[in-house]
Amino acid sequence: MVDSTNPETIALHAGWRADPTTGSVAVPIHQTTSFQFQDTGHAARLFGLAELGNIYTRIMNPTVDVLEKRVTALEGGVAGLALGSGQAATTFAVLNLCEAGDNIVSSTDLYGGTWNLFANTLKSFGIEVRFVDPVDPQNFVNATDDRTRCWYAETLPNPKLRVFPIAEVAALGRRIGVPLIMDNTAAPVLCKPLALGAAVVMHSTTKWIGGHGTSIGGMVVDGGNFDWEANAARFPTLNKPDSSYHGAVWTQAVKPLGPIAYIIRMRVILLRDLGAPMAPMNAFLTLQGLETLPLRMERHCANAIKVASFLASHPAVASVTHPSLMTGENKRRADAALKGGYGSLLGFELKAGAEAGRKFIESLKMFYHVANIGDARSLAIHPATTTHSQLNAEEQAASGVSPGYVRLSIGIEHIDDILADLSQALDAAA
Ligand SMILES: *Cc1c(COP(=O)(O)O)cnc(C)c1O
Image 1: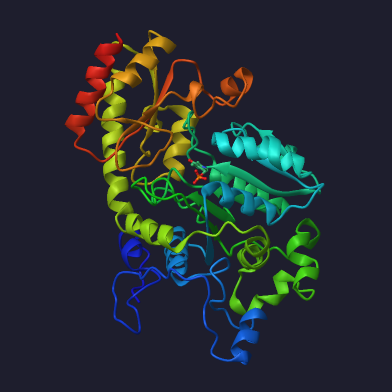
Image 2 (image 1 turned 180 degrees about the horizontal axis):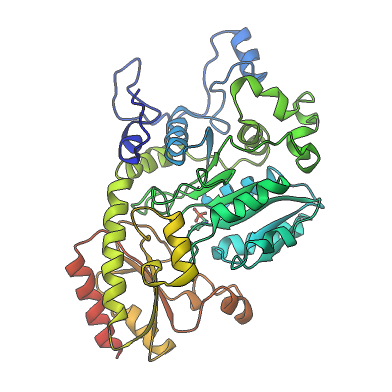
């Protein structure tokens, strides 16, 4: 096994060398639901968590396991769990700590799907989400009480693309014993939230990690850097005897295996009861994408910077949103959290407004008009009528979506072709 902290090497080698029976270098697709036990003692040890191993693919699968190890290594965590989608990853990350009557504090700058989950569905479960503006990190502390189980935010949230002050907020949380969960979907490789103090990282692997628009998936990575016992009353799911697992107390039960109470509980309780595993085939396809992620991020970022400066000087464009063009505190936060690039999401507003935005999108020839982001191909969308259409006008404005705003996810094509397509579509919309 290759031991490296460099993302280029981790992406190709972490968690796998070769198949011990066949010598296969590519990770095999273990398309099976179940695994034969060696004997009854082996089966009993696996069920009793005395030994970790494969039982049933809802809980664990060897192909999925390699992806879990690789993304965990990339984020610098101790263990990870792959799920059927990014939405499932967010849901599990929060439900692993919360029961009815509890609350969490979340940044207002969120993916639309996360907003709906937090504002409506979790509420219907009796879990309150308190939204605060990340402009002032102290807002997180002010919204926290004894029933607050975690804080939640995105590294590089679109459409505003204001980078979250991870180190500042994580440090405030640690002072009062509240963990920060970061959605790092838009900034893999560029940002290491765990190193900045976050306790947990989640990803929609659907986006940059998979990178080729083939497979929906999610990941949760446990940083192993948060003391769930020091303030045991705040984390009942990890510190109370679990009646569904022979009275196990998760912070104690898995101690010999390392600081993995959070992620083990998510696997053996939430994945067992709620389902939503990642399929082996999707793990294989996501691993294929992950192998070239560091290389793709370089090109994504280099192209996005060129697009940002092209649009900023274009006469038809009123404003451009990209961290590379920001100033003051927003630029400082971007530089503090992101290394090697400012990501490949970019927004802009046409001077001629919403109708011109629609015409621009319809005039694109190479960019795809899709709801995805993070694909190797360049993508465009009009958020007000699509991704953010389930929010009311007030919520749209609060999340930074104005009627004429166009969102781009810049791909890895040749920059000349990207700029040529944007240029002709801007002319057509004029
Ligand atoms: C897409 C996305 C999600 C949800 O992921 P799915 O894989 O689509 O379920 C969550 N957070 C962010 C930032 C996303 O872009």
